[in-house]
Length: 369
Image 1 (spheres, rainbow, N blue to C red):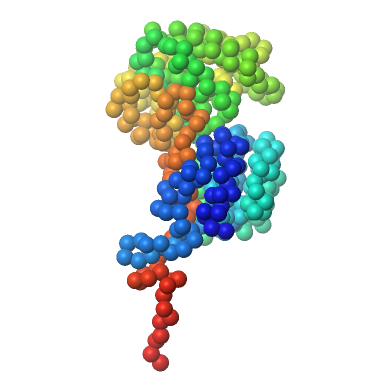
Image 2 (image 1 turned 30 degrees about the vertical axis):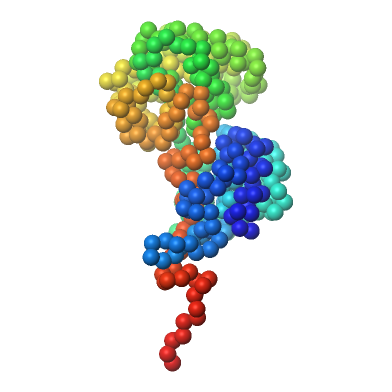
């Protein structure tokens, strides 16, 4: 099956799962072009410099999927299928139903290239040409240690995102709607979910919190999530801690759908998730030291208004790979550089052919006896 044929078969799936951020055939073409330069590089030798090159995809991919959000696993599988690889999916219980539903939507020709594994399989792991791991840093270290030297290893570890509003003036309902969207989608569980909201102006903090509390209350009526006991315990603990420290707090009581805390800390600390959002006032001259714990772990930054060049450079130094408008943090474009990487490119190796013609057109070379 050629790359063009795989694109044709994958395109209808994308419309069924808009969370992928891939609208259809043209987005899939762009993904391959961005990684390979052209669509047919997986199928034949193509011009490269003074010779020819061909992209070689892994014959078999072993995916270690995260337990947090299903879309990362769906996207990883789509990329493996786009390359024509066989895909072995180590899928945690929390995502097994979502992954099974996704695989059932695949056309039969591609479904044959997928196998869901309920747990780690040493034999399957050893048979793979490439390993893709999503998870905590400890998980990544564990699987990296299991890899042979000839196995390609690609990891997406722990990352955190934030909202930076800077010196925003009077908050608007449009701004609040965007913040609510970023916070509530995936229950603040993904690497693109904001951990905190940073403001430079103290005067804007309380008015924004009041508007956010109203917006989150309205959203909870439409999008209520049943809380597991361990989730409820984490939310209550965050609220008790805020009250003990005397921090202003807005919450919805026993419904446990959202929590807002205006806190005062010398440095960033993460949230427990589950729509617990911290509002932090951080003067620009203290921003670098305040964000220091995020160095190397910063993923996306949602912004409103103009971002000063000095602040932009700080985000890049800390490792941010995406800066986007408030309200779009959970909807990266198809060509998003996940953790700063070109999609698909790290799963490819190249073979060069030196000569005036590609091997398909080479005449047999005769050597003197």
